[in-house]
Image (cartoon, rainbow, N blue to C red; front, side, top):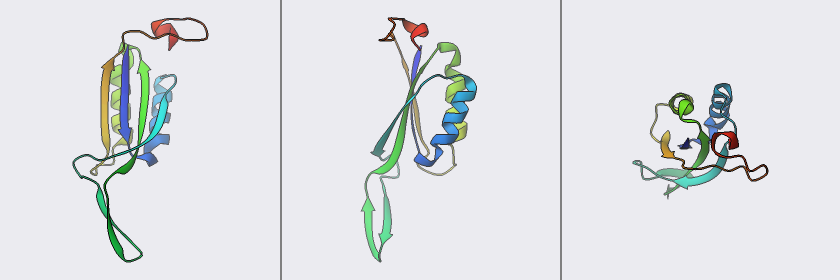
Length: 112
């Protein structure tokens, strides 16, 4: 099993969720986060005053999938979250050693 963590632009969430649902990925966690990458934030103008925003709003999506779905899920997230502009985000893939469904005690892929 793999845990896939993707940091994306907030307005791309619905497209990404729909793509993951079509692939059969079951369950995901979404968190509102702030951060910056190479762009180091951005400068904005509000009521004529210029100010620097150090951390940009992003969404972090986390899901665990069977090894067989990993490549398809990563490709789907990358394709649907891509705008072609700086700040599109990143995807990280981790090995998951164990999963347990608390309610039933099911283990590993059955717990997903």
